[in-house]
Image 1 (cartoon, rainbow, N blue to C red):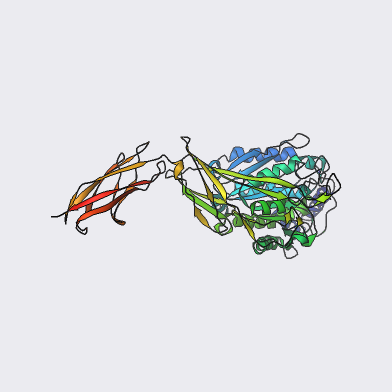
Image 2 (image 1 turned 120 degrees about the vertical axis):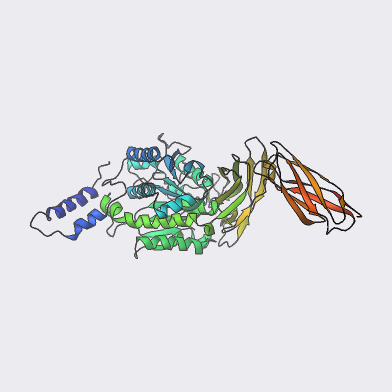
Length: 531
């Protein structure tokens, strides 16, 4: 554990004084009970070091392998340190089809409480995964946690990363050359790590934890950008989260707190349309230095309630989009989107003031695990909010959404591929056509001539590798008249010809497909003879 500068020693000394008053013969006061109640899931009583965080994440992953996976961000920090996070979900190895609540701490390295609260909530969810609330959430969604995104800043106890840059001013979307933003958009490895995390995780809710004011903020960052298109949804989430901390917490657009550029929540919302908030917590008396009791212990229970609300929103199908379909078991599905985003205008090398653009790529993937090949993938909407940052500068407010379909690609275990485009909005479920990812089939059908008023038989042979199984449907002149089940690719279907007039009729045999075999059909003639 870390030895704090001021506050924890003072808080513990006060606690010792209270305990002394409870010696035999004295009446115990309520402060001891309050202190005992203000415990953390980990039982910690002091701030962690970076090594403590790594050990905690290692422990959770080792003790709960079906529930917790530890991952490493793509880039090391400026000083060469790895940055770690956790994915927490039931059957975590196959949970990529679930929407995510992405929860991160310590953008600012001297805001230690933000990392503690984030880590403790992860521990609570894991240690209580069999409770009704968390069990349901973990079945329906993933909790993606990075307790310390600015590792160098934590170790140095500085707001900025090692280069002196405020990483929460370094995000490319809306970037401007003020408030220690870096040499350019995305100049810092810590910020690029967050870009990777947000662009790959299908975070339907994103929270970045901070100190020290009492507010929950949401996009936009500039008043000139105007209200975000999803302001009613953003405000509802922020207000719900703020209410858990107490009546003195407020929920408002970040621009109404103070205007900034290049923050995480602006990029997250306008790139992915995930609901994005900055949660700031603070004791009633602003701490001088780091004070574990007021900043962490006294806040945690309310914080856990607040984060569970955010987690619940992330899991709610009404708050995200869903893509369904059928593909061979073991297939890898990949969802991508590419588009251009812009910074704010800033002074260029030639002295002109103009924005610059950068290309954005969203990509996430899942594996089909169901035996029947069905999948249901919780994702963000493909309809992206029109950003106020454009090649012409800041043009707000914007009220519309861009129709930018996802590209969904399937790669089967046998190497077959298929791609399709998908447009899907918040609260919608859309079925994707991936027939080409399944093995092709061919239907051949022969119908014995029918004598008017008597039954006849349709012989169907569905060819494919492996030999297809499943159902076939027989139609005559567009009307379903029989069905059957394939056995080793073949079926015989008896049909009643008593309702058919004499002469030639159009006969269609359709194979519905299976998890590994694509649907197909054929059309031939059925002859009905005079009795």
